[in-house]
Image (cartoon, rainbow, N blue to C red; front, side, top):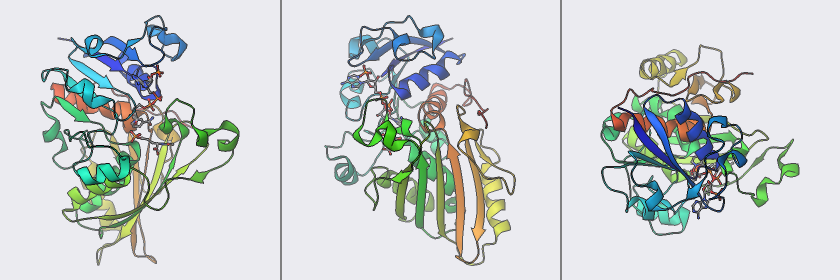
Length: 342
Ligand SMILES: NC(=O)C1=CN([C@@H]2O[C@H](COP(=O)(O)OP(=O)(O)OC[C@H]3O[C@@H](n4cnc5c(N)ncnc54)[C@H](OP(=O)(O)O)[C@@H]3O)[C@@H](O)[C@H]2O)C=CC1
Ligand SMILES: CC(=O)N[C@@H](CCC(=O)OP(=O)(O)O)C(=O)O
């Protein structure tokens, strides 16, 4: 039997990507579409690429409009989800693309987000050890941040197999769509085009504690992290170069075998053939994370590089993948595996 899903934030980037995916999902029917200031207007004004839904009118984001669906996807600015979720029944699956319920550590939340912590929900990264079990039958899901998904998928196999020391450096190149649709002072077109630049430097980015949370959980010991995001002139995509000191005696072959073993059963996380490095273009529009691993012998460091589409595996695709598990559907239902290249 088909389920219905409402999408809150349907006029935004994450909401648009959710709708693109749900249009091709055989087990979920699209119900109410809601927004903020653009409520009352046609979806086609905001998402002209979603032709089948162009004439749908955006409703106000209210509990009344979101209630009565099997699934509610929230693609709203941070801080908006808790009030809505607490008024939706426990029988409704609420999938939050925002950050509000991702962290278990309230002090870390308050330090990085500067507001009271709303709580912690089952975490929407099925590839983590125990991740699928935590999502089966869940009625609340916190979708990870997009940098977090990339870095976690790149390094989790190494920490799961205990081949690297828990002292991580991540430098992640990201496209501009990660910042959302609303105009931002640091995203002025003429200053972003033809240039790349770091932001959130020195441990300041709010994805820091979430990456630490995930990798420490996999490693079974606290992981230290230096994370630097770099904004690049592309609309979609994240390419994360992640390194950590090797445990004694780990060869490049051993590292590769570790990744092959841990990723071989994953439907969306693929270890590329030796010598092929991931690029963001390979993942565009796909729910995939493409990974490559090697060893820098001179530096004695493991080097793992992962690419994702921040809006697909990094947000909407990841959200639908986790929702599939929670609903008891095959995990891969309705999710694209093929990217757009070059
Ligand atoms: N972009 C990305 O790569 C990722 C985004 N996310 C998360 O997804 C969420 C949405 O992000 P994104 O789509 O990029 O943001 P956008 O700015 O593109 O879209 C925001 C959406 O929220 C709506 N909205 C804004 N304010 C309100 C309000 N007060 N009440 C109701 N609706 C409101 C907007 O409606 P209107 O247009 O009418 O104002 C719009 O539909 C965020 O929490 C973000 O952190 C998570 C991972 C990655
Ligand atoms: C370019 C850019 O600004 N990217 C965003 C990515 C945001 C994201 O993925 O996630 P949440 O906002 O849901 O945490 C950033 O770095 O903050």
